[in-house]
Length: 164
Image 1: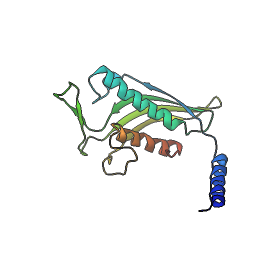
Image 2: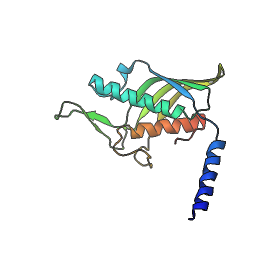
Image 3: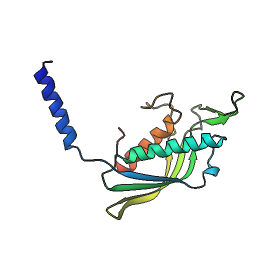
């Protein structure tokens, strides 16, 4: 490709990006009685780390909401994919995913506001029953890849937002 064609192609891409609507939604995530959540790590620091990573993913996805909108999510129940089994190495558990009845599940209560008005609210049951049969855009090394995919699906279904 000649330098002129490259410049024109880049200019076209930049103009498309500039024409896209600005996205900068915000999110506030809270956990309601996380001590009752099923199959979370036993160690406090591991449990907190997992819940922080899930909350961070909600916040990342909420940035795709239109500017000025805020999403408040209360996680009422959370059961990540797989089951925890004791490990004799290092004292922490090992998560075993079998693809059977161990899919990720979550219950959320949400409120989406914009310009001081409630745009949407409700309570949803999230699940990803076919979590091992689908193409997943997250790395195999990501311990929350199935949960993130489930959250992405919810954003797409509920708010018509496709993940990055």
